[in-house]
Image 1: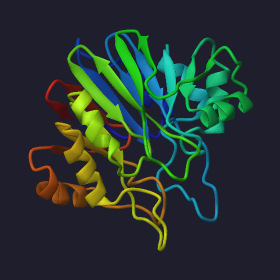
Image 2: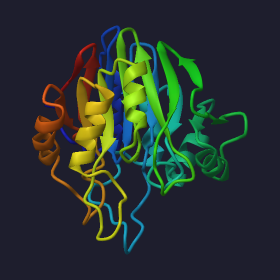
Image 3: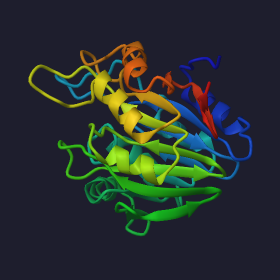
Length: 272
């Protein structure tokens, strides 16, 4: 099992040195809905959140996976994908660090791209990427899909396809009928879904039942459970998702994302 590192540069260097087989997709969880994704020919950052807590309501339960100044240790980054404009996804701290590095494009919703430009990203690298847009990045094809997040101005999911491997990243989407349509269009090896304990009277994240329903509707071979560990007071044991998925999607493999640890996707599902 890969260790958790308090040295962000060491973590990024480990990711940079890792071997990824042709046709596979490797993910390293960096908290929230954030990942480093690598194939043999591409490296992506998804929703990197490197900023501080926002007290008193939003207090981190896990630290940033690395410091903004460490980002160069990852080496070449081919693109950054932002699902929506909330600051734990379109993080001004992370985006300012990305803006300081040359040539890295940032793709996202209009509101997320506004955050990126305010953080210093020049217009040529800040790219509004509406649903149904598709773009080759190295040996990946990235396609934007609409998600349902009523607390955001708009929200994208991202389909990553390499060889015969397909992943759907959903940001903080709530359950909606669109998961069924996506599952009809794509054979998903894995889906990344946010789960959390909602504050009284609020629906900020999916609960375990809705994660299981979204997994069932999408037909994904594996569900990667994310965001459950980010905020104090809103954490949720991902084993609860495993329990409920036995009812809704008994054939689906449930994989909780673990901080700084690798998940490898290949046709048919995901593994550590």
